[in-house]
Each structure stands twice: as C-alpha cells, then as structure tokens.
Amino acid sequence: MADSLKEYINKLSKNCNSIHSIQDINNMYNYEDKIGGGNSLEWDLLSCGQDGSKSGYNELERYYYTHIPDNLKAKYKYDILKNLCECCKELDHSVRTHNKFKECVDKKLAKIKLLFKLGNR
Image (cartoon, rainbow, N blue to C red; front, top):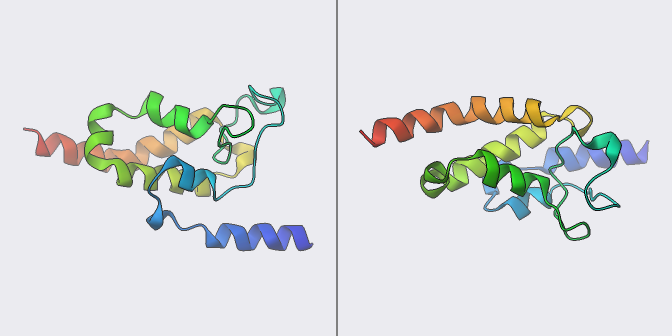
C-alpha cells in the first residue's frame, strides 16, 4: 500500500510546465534498464525515465531526435518538451508502446505544426 501511495503522490507532483530538457522528464521517473539495450519484455515500450546513466541509452531522447523535425525543435523546443512530458504522464508505462506514444505526441504537435506552417508562409 505504501508503494502505491508513494507512486500516486509522485504522479501528482509531475508538472510538465517547468520542463526545460529531456533530462527534466527523465528525472520525474524512477526507471533504468538493468541491462543496456532494454529488457526483452519491454522492447515495444517507451521509457520516459531511462536516462542512459547506467545503460548508455535514453529512449525519450532518441525519440526526440528521431521523430521531431529540426525546424520545429528550433522554434518550439519547450512546447515540444512539454508535449513529450504530457504523453509520458498520460500513458502508463505498462501500455506506453512506441506507437501509442507517437500517436499521442503527433496529436499534441498538430497545433505546433500548424503554427509553424502559418508562420512560414
């Protein structure tokens, strides 16, 4: 019971409005793969807390650099980080597949993409 209450309080304390880096998001979670490259049972899941300090691999950072266009990152970095944080909060780790995470981020980034498109006419 104490662990579940602690987890609940930890979730409530996560505030995505104060995010300035991927590391800030990583720090909201207490998770690190014991073996570099990930746990084979979790290969399909995206970890928001794996900061790479033990395994050398940061899944959220990899997602950011792989799936977010550079032109958006340059202009809307903090809004994008906030969106990543919100998707981490909204999708429990046990169901946060790479595909579901991408769907969540894409929905949130739709407004940013539209603003970018309108601002670059």
